[in-house]
Each structure stands twice: as structure tokens, then as C-alpha cells.
Length: 420
Image (cartoon, rainbow, N blue to C red; front, side, top):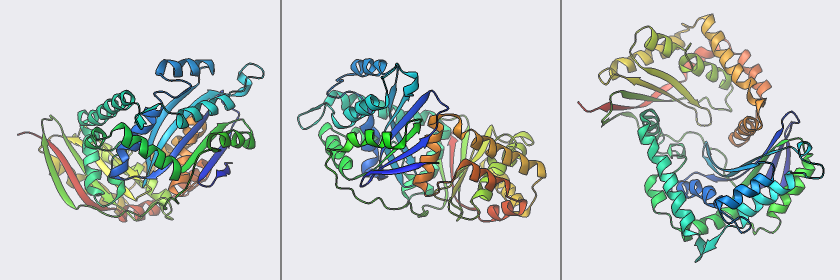
């Protein structure tokens, strides 16, 4: 279903033909190994590029240009998929058949994305200082906002410990101190480096012919000086800290986070069983953790689990009274043991499968959902279609879930508690 075209070495277009939508989309991302040295600059870069270019030197000019393109939108995009950090932009625009006759939008949208990417405003050997300073403030504010969301903060601290030796522990937006240290010249030098050597993936969803889109994309990079450096494959989990870390803050509610490892990743034969297990164990209001620890025993305010398939990691997060961490941790492990022992009802199996299948059936409901699902699969090394995924979920048995549960091992715990 996806047409793949190599535009130039290291530059690939993925084309998903779909004529159901009024809107089409085109994303462009430079794919990098996430590192502490680069993460903050990669997160900052697209926002700076979208502040202005030679043909549209400020936000107002950009807005007017997009208005002329029937209200198209182009936004900065920063994602993390396993070992990779993606930095780039995402464009959404109406299909050509909805524009006035002879006013196709693909070409002008691609041309404007080219201008934003390749014709930034510079001064004194770097990006414009006011652009960089303004976007640094915005990025630092975004990073600091995590501190106000204690659940997100605790989860990030758990991943930092769990993945102390793995790139997956690095935050998608980098660290605040690294953002603060960026200057316009350093960022511009980094931009030129990654534009030259990065793998660049483009993903289009719409009704245009694949060759038409490929020809349009070629105009972006035809004159770009490239020296592509091969991107290493995703790596298995590389380990981190073990044991329990307790941090104290002025919080009314404690945040208990537990990190587990499993050999089951996206390429493992039991991948679908692991997905069903995670949903049955800690996904949604019908899961074991929610029903047995929150509802029946009223020992937490919220609870749930998450599964990071690219690395084979599972986490559990719970909001609890600050003196209940040991008890709740014991009960969580008890629910895990129940799954290992096969104490799983048919209703629990059905609810978990239906929840997963429902989410997969929604993948094709919008261009952005299509782009996100398939690009994640491609970069994770498991480009499974939703239909194949659904078939795999339906085939999972109770015994498969038991085996998936047995493969899960507790590695570390993080507890954020209030001041006594």
C-alpha cells in the first residue's frame, strides 16, 4: 500500500495513496540518533526555521502565505522513536481537486517548505538572534512545564534511571541547561551539518500520483550539498540502574513508577501477546490494575501501564498516598503474578483485544494518524499494516498472554513523595 521512492541517497519518500480526505499531508524529517549533545538543538531547530525565511521574513508573512494556499498549515515537529530523534516539519493542505481549476497546491506547498528549510534568515554567521532567543524561551518553558505535571515528571525520572545506559532515557526535547547554552552560530552550524549528512524521510498522504509527488520533492533537494552518513539500526535495550530511588517534593500526592524489562520487542514472535498483556494488565478502566487496586481497594487515584515496544520496556505509574508506596508496589507485582499464573478471565481477554482493535481501526481515520502510524513502524523496523496487526491480536490466546507476562522482570522503581 505504501509506495517507496528513493529521491536521492539517504532521502526517501513514502507515499500512502488515499483519496478519502479533503486534506493531504506531507511531513519532512531529518532522522538522527538521539544524543545529549544534539537533542536540544534538534528540538529547537524547526521552530527557528519556521520563524521566517527569505520569501516570508516574519510570522505575519508566513501566515499570509499560508492563507493564500487555502489555509494550509506548516508546523514544527520533533519526535522520538526508539534510538532516533526526528526533527522537521509537517504540512497539511487541501487536495488539488478542492482548489480552483489549475491551482494545484502540492507544488506551491512543497516550494514553500523548501524555502523554510533551505532559505533561513541569518546574520553574523548564524541564525537571527531574536529568532533563536525567542524559541529558546518557548522550548525551556515547554521543558519546565513537565515539572508542573508531576506524573509526567516522575515517568521521565523513571526512564532516566531505567535507561541510564540507553539513548531511550534521553528526553525528546533535550535538557533545559543544554537549550540555554545554544547560540545562533552553533545552531546554524549544526543545521548545516545535519542537513548534509542525515537520513531524510518524507511521508505523503493524499491522492496525487507517487511520481508527481516524487518529482515535486526532488525540487527541494536538487541543489543541496549532501554527504549522507548511514543511520545505524535500532539497538536492543542497553540497561541502566536497578533498585529504588525516592525523591521528595512539595506534593500532596505521591507518584509511584515501576520500570520493567522484557525480551519481547516489535520483532519478537510474542509481540502481539505482549500488547494484549499490557492492555489487560494496565491499559484503561477494565484492566487488572485499575479494577483491583483502584476500584476494589481504593489505594490509588490513578494507575496504568505503558509498553515501549521498540526497546522491550514496560512501565507502571500510580498516583497514591505518600505512605502507601510499599503496599501498592506489592499489589502491582501481585497482579503481574496473577497474569503469569493464568488468573485471567475471558472478559478481561475480550476487553483488552477489543480496546487494541478499536484503536487500530482508527489508524486510517485521518492523514496525520496514517502518517504517524506507518512512519513509526518503518523507523522501528516493523512496518505492519493495521489489518495484519489486528489479525495478530485476534490470534492471541490466554496461554500466550501468560508467557508474555512471565517474560516481564522488575528492574527499578522511582517514588516521588511529599515532604513529611
